[in-house]
Amino acid sequence: MESKREQAVVGLFVLVAGAVLVATVFALTGAFGSTAATYRAYFPFAGGLEPGATVRYAGGPKVGRVENCSWTRRILRASK
Image 1 (cartoon, rainbow, N blue to C red):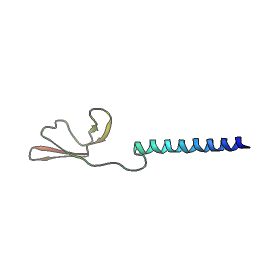
Image 2: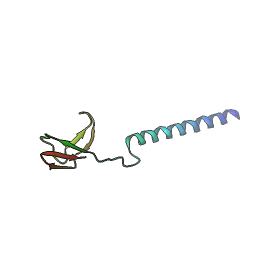
Image 3: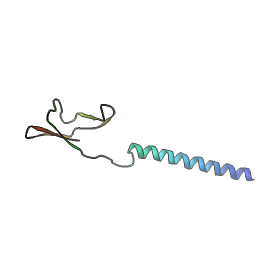
């Protein structure tokens, strides 16, 4: 009889641990909510930068796209 109780406790622990793991993965990937933020950058020279261009983190993974480009006194302002 004790064996069945131990099996139930272990099974419940495995299910809870699995649920916590799945929730952690979703939370880290941003699946639970919008984590989008708007950033503005000013460049003295931004040849080839245009709306829709891919924004990459240090040349690596894609983190967004350029939404708008405008000129401010010979300086290009880009916002993500």
